[in-house]
Image: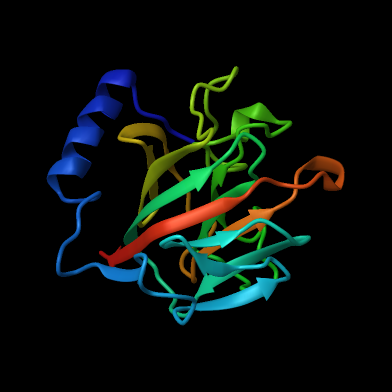
Length: 203
């Protein structure tokens, strides 16, 4: 696993911004935007996904996912989401088994401020790229952005304009991506997750 220095990470943010990673362009496929509903997704699990207030929302159930209907290899994802301090969510990408989605079958850009293993809390790629402890990246009660780039073995997560992790890994080569609603440790209810924009651009 290789990580960038603080200076290199800062330069990477500039390069990603310049390349349009967090902007809307003609090459982007929009899957959620306040008007599009659930027609672009397959559901896995029992989360109560629904359109509400210009977003796709889930706040009840034992856990579930919205899974993209298409598979991707190299790509950029841009997402705008709202989460509170108890939300357990994430974006799983290059999912190897769309019926058994977990951090053991995909890369997971986590959204989980209160994760018991804090090194893989919000901003991390679970099991592959950790964030500082105590956690410095928080979603609590705000609208946030994720920009995720996967190009060959290079994986980058940008949270609210800051590179949180960069690593190289080739465990998962391609697959759909998925949005999660989950419960917390020992079955404690998870807080709501809201997605008001989700886009993907193949590279």
